[in-house]
Image (cartoon, rainbow, N blue to C red):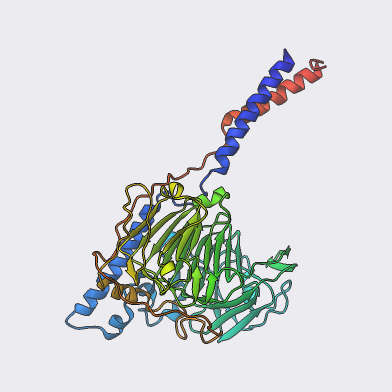
Length: 481
């Protein structure tokens, strides 16, 4: 009788563990925003408020010249750039983030660390005063640069939690082996730096904190690699010419904003999501706003596996294959972007679904609202209640996009990397929009159900204890022979 009881209990335990494991691996991420549409609406409110303030300032009887010149309608820039003493209040930048990366504080509240040495000679014992020495520290740091510098990395630069890399006031260029890695960290801001010519490296020891040195395999050669991290904000950077991606966001990363950057001269620009079968990426949430996707780009602007991506008020000059792509059913919310198609008639489509039939992707939630479609570009939406005709807006919105992206890239110098690396490739300039209505898109509800965290049922623990008790009693009294 006892053996049958044990067999029955073991069966119950296995069933509960199986159900619990299935539930666990389909969880959304712990730091995923439960209502992504509210984040989208908040961003829209911020943009509209900044635009209204600019219009009111320009319409005032007595115009403040400095104020009218600095206000662009871009809520990030208008948050800090109109302060003539911004350099004395650098940490105000941390209050200006928007979208899913809103609340990213970086090194706010920490001390300032001034990088004085551009060298990168030792990845295990970095020299004080170097960028590598700064980013590995445990404490929150606001990292600035004493002067213009080109930092040629020996191997990948592994950034610790609670750091701001603030290149304002200097021409800071990061290039070389591995480039920037954010792995299992939170609260990192990278602002106003050039990142280019990043190549694979590794198979060496690299220090990631004052107390930890670890062996690193070969890196992919990404410009910025975001791996299992949250609350990350990449703003006003220029990225080009890397071996793999310019920015990769993978392995359950979430709470990320990519804004005001200038991308150019690259094939696979931005990958979101590790693998079609990696379920934690279902909780990935990324805002891509006010960027310029410039000349010489081919694809992945971005390419997303799972997750939710808000692509808003970006300027796409052209593409070689497609602009926005995805697989494994990601949600794309595209609002108020300008998509300028290349001359090649075979690649006019903005969107691309990877490796699935229309019968499958027709249920994916891909929305377009208020997008400006230029030179024959067309966006194929999908999801419940969506018509097959992509929308476009009148020409005044093209002017608005110019205004919102006018300062994309690095501030205070060449906005892109054209002064640092050879350009090659190239693309035709974009033109204005045509026909339609509305400056900004309406907000769509996501058709993808949000997954809520849950744990294996309490009965699993109870059954485990019960089995241990029965085995103890029966073994002690000779019940199991």
